[in-house]
Length: 165
Image 1 (cartoon, rainbow, N blue to C red):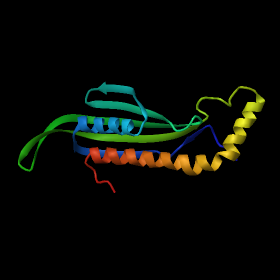
Image 2: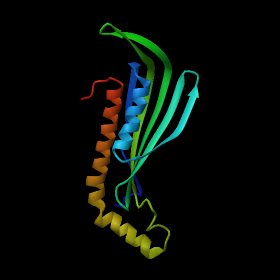
Image 3: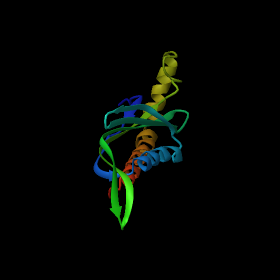
Image 4: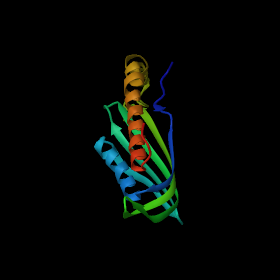
């Protein structure tokens, strides 16, 4: 069975309704990407009324042959500033409904060294991917990427003050 060039992992969806600190939430995501050596960028940012839409993405070069791509798409509805009293002190915070989707993709031969450069290199690339590195790709690198995806989800849940199991 031939491995595809891009191997997408299952999507993780997080939903939250309630109080959270929006600045700390965005900062926690940004810091996670930086701490895990992902090249981080904000692909899209859109503000319509009290609704925010973000698309954060990060790339990490695992090897010269493999690349991890992580995307975090967020829609924040009805974002409002709020004050709550916690332990007798007033705290400024935010209230909103948050919908987050985290997707991860393993990209093989991301530099295109074995693609469209003749039949011999294409066959050599297919042999390398499907026979020599297959189990390392599927059993090691894809699993490590899935762990990173869950780790990002846990950081997001912690920033939203959700219970992380």
